[in-house]
Image (cartoon, rainbow, N blue to C red; front, side):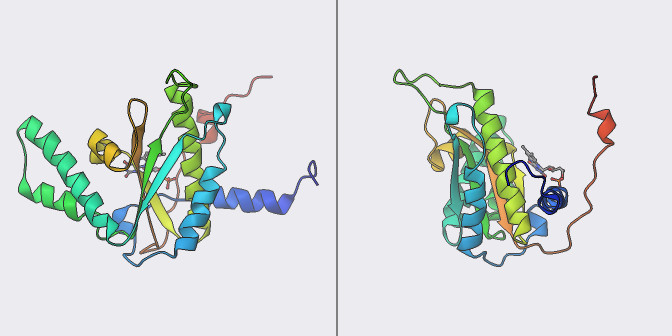
Length: 205
Ligand SMILES: Cc1cc2nc3c(=O)[nH]c(=O)nc-3n(C[C@H](O)[C@H](O)[C@H](O)COP(=O)(O)O)c2cc1C
């Protein structure tokens, strides 16, 4: 019933939220992940809220051989940046190119804002980004509940405009917000840690 508190559902949900952990490349097994599990997590992502029902999240799922081209896109992004700064290293280029090989699933996290007839954004960049973050959290929660593990990577080549074009985001408004790596965990989940809640919440009567 709609207004009846379902204690079990709340406890299950809270446990799923508290047990969700971020686990990066080194903590994932290379074994492939059944497509149905990835699809279920993406379905959860799609049920995120968005102001104005813009649904700005865009995901591209790279598995199998598709990861080779993605690694090359990362390496080229590194080359552009490093050459501009004058500190290109072949070993770093190779590492960027090979980094996709050991994780079975790479999901690009894109934001493609809704626009009106004149091409102007219907909502603000902040609102559209917040909606994408909600979607990623849904994805992560369901992936962990399925026994998978993963992490949002949001720095450097993972946000590169050239990589954004590679994953199909369109200018002027499309943005790449990172990548979500996904796989089966290589080891037990680390303990989660949070500073005391009272440092972040103020109650006002
Ligand atoms: C928007 C966003 C971006 C993140 N980017 C990175 C990242 O680039 N590298 C990284 O190691 N972790 C990244 N993380 C994961 C955080 O490090 C992680 O959430 C934090 O350590 C708390 O751990 P938990 O997720 O297991 O609770 C990101 C998380 C969020 C929400």
